[in-house]
Length: 579
Image 1 (cartoon, helix red, strand yellow):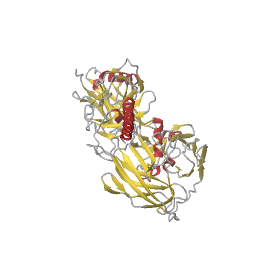
Image 2 (cartoon, helix red, strand yellow):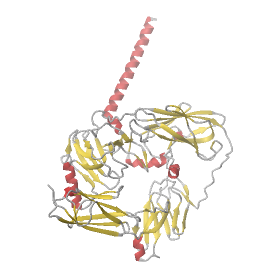
Image 3 (cartoon, one colour):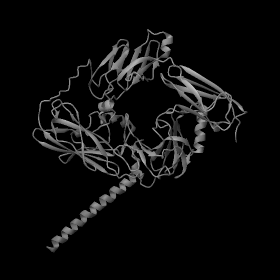
Image 4 (cartoon, helix red, strand yellow):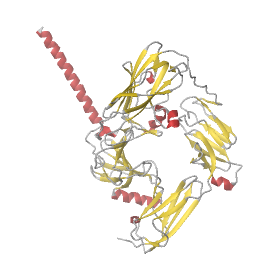
């Protein structure tokens, strides 16, 4: 008896040691994979997030975290570790003023929406802009010895440039070799987060022609009941056949009201995990598959994003983990099913949604109408259709799956189905313009006219008798004429005025037609750099850029829209150089 107990204790001890060894190895591997203390906070304030990694955005997953800057611009941005500035890009949209630091540990950190760079970098960037006489620089690449940085060194200042919705710092971590993006929270960036995700709604889908959900063979939104913090349920559902689910869910962090994305989503059916995805890492090439990951038609109609807990066959996201039947649930008659959907944030704050299903065969009370549109598209084939001087051409695999397509032209408006089908590739839309005069052609452009009050300019290539554009969005398109030149107004001073105390020249520009294409400003006949805040429609020149000669100066700006209408403003002012 004593010997038996001794042997059992030895066995337990061995198992414990094995488990300890496994956990030690696991955590050591995780720390080696993603170092926890290598990077410091890129800002000198507590980390509060306005946006999380992998968050659902328009046509892409968010590739970093958005760190709040207390509503201010100009906060110091610090190098989180030793390395060198490897790339800079200044764009009107996207990341705006962006900076990339490559580190010797195999990772690159990225900073977006900056207001300006550290002095030596800013000086170099402006020299490129003045040499090219362009605001946008394109990608500027650097070698290790050009702009080396030390941990804690100031590399830039936070801002609101590019496609930013307000002042913040966009921060990314990438694998230097593969360019894959990794959730920055894995590197020791720790915002305070004690709140579980919030479920807003559930949607259920019949996924084959014989499937039913509550006596219907169409998708349906199901109301939720909150029964405790992080606990939700729905009334019992009757179903049959193969069904799927999606959820509208968000997460909030402490000290912020922003509705952020979740970290992971799981679905269990009778205790067995059928679906799991998380946002640890992904590649930029995958990001477009967000339109298969969400209920895209629902999003286009109602601007609400529902994440599916089943995978579409064409979806190549790598974020899915060990799916059963791709997350589809087969409901059999007279059987009961308990489904639980679990949402977690990075800190593993958890919310669960419980769904009870009764397997019940039924004839559908509501039957989804059969699609009878004129054109059937086999996804793997090329198609070209023409009606009333309008041609659409779809390359092979433009569509993710075979579809029926509606295409017609009425009163000059080409309706190419509806914008509720996501596309993998762009298609070409061509208008025959041979009936128009040369003067009329000059002012015409192709526009998306889903909202006829606000035509949206499509980049229009013009040939003698045809205009064409490429796009990944179905919907309504037409030729629109723009006869209005842009508006240009100088701010804060008038012609022939002394402005000795002014540090800048500000000009407001706008266009009610095809939109602003470009602008060119000169001071005393020489090109000057004006930064365009397209959200406020204000151009700004900083007098610190160039030394003034004399006291009388002439400022001139020419602004053009996308069809070539131009407006020129010229004014004289008086100002002496202040040292």
